[in-house]
Length: 345
Length: 111
Image (tube, rainbow over all chains, first blue to last red; front, side, top):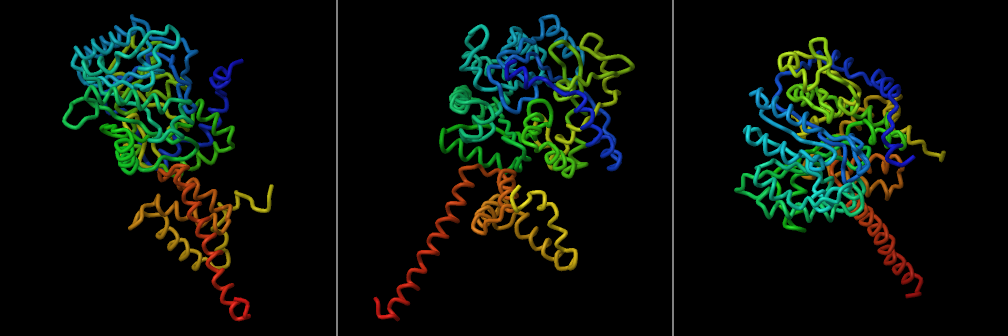
């Protein structure tokens, strides 16, 4: 059995035990906080689990060995949903490396024709690595993103090689720098340009992140000084205690300590701004979830008494659904909060 | 397990068992001095604390301030430099006492 297969196995009964031990519902009740959906302004689609990297903390368990891909029928259905629901302003495309889905370019260009704001969770290295299965080059991506005015959001765990390669694999930092410079060359992250390049920081280990503001200052100073790199914002994200990262915590004997830290750092103000209140997440096979983390934990959304998919998508039912919570949700409500767009307070 | 148990760090408050008020005053002072941004950032304070922890060779403090350094955005390179500062100070402190030795040699007519 490969390392990736072992990493992918999840102990569901243990997850349930942990949800009871670290009950998010209980915490909400103690804090007299209710978190119903407010709207749906972002459609986040996970279009593939295939990735050119195998990162240590990846909650998707993505890798070059994964085969899951959203098919064209589902891509078209997502575009229909975007076209018919005006309140959904944003399309957030993630993976895996989303560019490795064969319908990725089509999805981006069609969504832009609908005047939707398109964000891509771009891992940087895919531009240079290409498709690990077919060998197809992806060097056109910076130009493609510029033409379509895509907001590029890229993981960069640190402004130095050590932490970055430790989390994302040997050689990733060097390739990431090369890829960022290609994006800068097209105008991404450059002052006065409308092309947005944001980075994502998440801790390389079993600890909570530092403040977004101080890290952003460090990243901007150091990356500019060493490489002449420019970018717009740094989003600081807390590592979610699920899948690979949870297994790492368990191996280190640090899971309970990490959870206690998250629970003790519960911030009701951060809780009120959790992303699941204004976003829904779609899996490669068209199922609908409250967020990408719930998707990875198979916590299917049931709205109006039926499991929700893109094929029976009903905005009103979804906006009136009950969001499903688990112990991992403490990751989004600790300290300054955490979301796909960084801190929430 | 060695003589120290890392779990004991969480029991720090128990030291106030027979003198609660003094312990509370200590924690107030401690948290104000180390746990908040001031003229120094929390990260700078954590790096100083890490260096002191090594000089005083306190395993509780080393565990605690390694995490605190990471959670305030420091990296292993900065942390290692901090303990080199501590180590070089310790070496310097040892060596400057050589003057004391020279004074003693002089008194003994040996210098």
